[in-house]
Image (cartoon, rainbow, N blue to C red):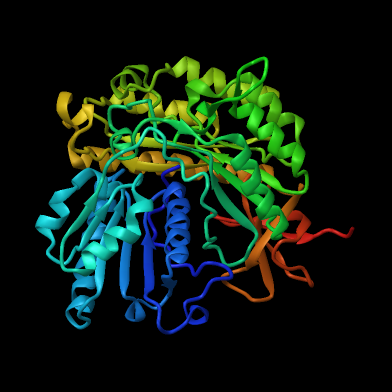
Length: 466
């Protein structure tokens, strides 16, 4: 679920700083990294709103600047350092401005952020957002404020997020936090703590509120979403992710249900049958492989072999049917040989991914790989292998789109096309972007679109008559 690292500056729907009064302090927040960070920023805005702090999209009007950070890769942190240099100029011209680092980078670096960057006033980890109001008051007195304590209970289940999307079509719903997997390359268990699941009633209530407000799609989020487990009063004694997804789909049949991210070890046949049974559960599964080599997978502590991973791919194809599959691939992990790389390429071909997120290995301090393994693949080799992975995925993605020619898909409209106001864009159940002439349709409509051509990034089609 760690995808593009573009900052997000969206103004929360139905909540503007201008409408909240000129005497209130205003918050400006930038979000980097994964979908979970987007969800967390919505929680932060909600907490601040309840404590009388307005919101602004204009950084020059802000009294408080927060940057919600990601530590999954080194370049994610480097972008934050660059933004802090920009904030320094703003702070120098605006006495009293508070600048804070929140999220995973705050958890990983802790006091070092306060020591290294004199402009940072507060540092807050992902489990301490309820303390933001008091920490901001502390920072307002000139003291440096920090809270990076991890929790085994915090899920923010009782907080209603202020939605930061602008089209009121789709929303993220966090159903669990943390991770127990301890992949050797990953900082998430150290920055977000152990797994804990929200109670299902609060999840379903949040989805219900979104439904009442006209949303047409939700994405259920977790670092490893299909390990969701919550104790309930029933003969089984617990509700797993398949059960939660089934309840949500049945309660709100007019809403699409997505989820991210799945761990290959935990995606069960039971879950796949649940997906297959419900038309409103989207036919797309993000299943990170990371490598096609069993030897490398063992070093990564992924908990499955190449053969076991491909068996899960086969199960998805057989049980769900027309299901898009995407993945994450890491190039140049510790000790990766040319043969290991070839096995990754061959796994990609066999899995026939519709799209993928592909990266060079970036050693993260504090992980098992950083402590126990040598980052010994030369940078130029990592880059060359990554280029080959990207090139292959380009071919696989083109084949996927070519197979869609002439087919008709139900598309949920998300908004106007970036290239033309006379065209709309939306996504299929398989999470493929489609562009088509507007013809009076609008955001939130479900439209049957026949695919006529495609570009490297987009399917293009025409709306079909009712």
